[in-house]
Structures are given as structure tokens and as C-alpha cells.
Length: 84
Image (cartoon, rainbow, N blue to C red; front, side):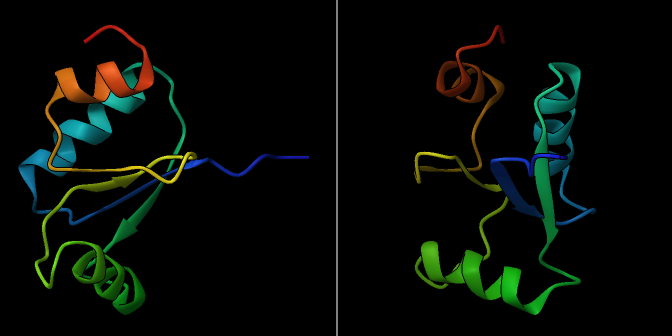
């Protein structure tokens, strides 16, 4: 049985911060589910809903329900307990 990634990342392909966050997670073999707000209307609505109407990306949702918006690599590392 394949387990579904517990981390959800909402972003867009054109977004440099999204590419950096994806690279950070990939480099540490941390699985995540990608949601492109340009391609997925539900994903866009979710991001706007949690960011007071703004399309602030990346918006990253963790298994504990916490959310980081536009986090730095250091913030991601602290949250996940991995080296920056």
C-alpha cells in the first residue's frame, strides 16, 4: 500500500519561492503533494481562503494542520527538524 504524502504544497510553476521549497523537500526526500493554483481552482480558492484573499505562495500545510506561507529554507528546516 502506498501512503499519501502528508505535506501539501500550494504554488505555481512560475514562482521562484515555490521552486526553492520544492527543491528543499526533494533534496531531503521529504514527500509532498503539489497543488498548482494556476491549474486547480479548488487549490487557488484554498490558498486565498487561508491567506485573507491573497494568493501567497508557496502555502505549505503540514500533518499537524499548521501552515507556513512563503517560508525560507531555515523556517522549513526548523519545522521539519532537518538541516537547512
